[in-house]
Image 1 (cartoon, helix red, strand yellow):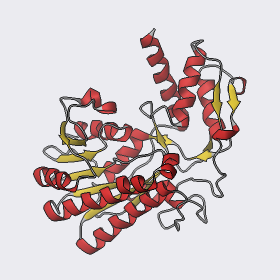
Image 2 (image 1 turned 90 degrees about the vertical axis):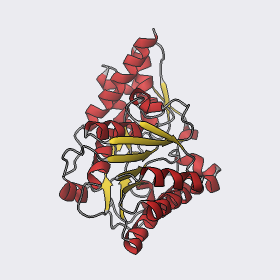
Image 3 (image 1 turned 135 degrees about the vertical axis):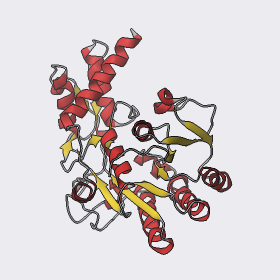
Image 4 (image 1 turned 180 degrees about the vertical axis):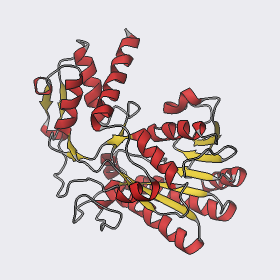
Length: 326
């Protein structure tokens, strides 16, 4: 497991996002021919724009079953990584039908296309730690009962269940990654992690005074997105498919994240944080922390970048971004 893959082909949905860009970089390093499904081939490749010319693209709407089936039939890839999905949980309450269509229905259409046109393809499905909801234990394991608490979480649970069903019923190689929070400098600024690191960099540069946050005691299990995508790749190199939790195994609060970001710049976080009660979410009865033991034991996977290293990487990237604009 983990050798070169010269001559192998991979198809990525969500190429232009944080995860897709890190995965594409990894696959190219291993000698894959990489193709990304994107909505508009003329559009910017987002986080993967620096890979233009190294990856191929196919214009395809995941909601369009016919174009999806054509793309899979044309490529018949050795590996398929299905990462594309809306990822901002609060929005799923505003658009539950659209959320379920873009996540669960699109996954069903994609797997149907694989079954009909490319059954040899090894498929990785990206699910989420949100599927556990008010789980009866922390940390959560692959066997932990699921109680999704949002339309987004319900759709991601459907992805996991559908993958397992078609794996058993049709003999397809389908592995599902249950992904806990994974971050990088490519994370959109709507996420609290980038909000913090961008604000810390701006304050250090004298361009801002404070950052407004909600619940500082909210706990998350944060890892580096590049590490998690390495896990996705390893999942498809295993002899048999399975479901895997990809997480650090340690819970950290938003306060700890902010303190690490400001401390990296020699600043005191408490002097620059304002609290807005409207940004608070309902308290979580169980800490969302994952147990990555199965991935560690079966795939040899473990995070390589520490929590402190991740925060420092993000802060430094935001500092460089500010400097480039001045």
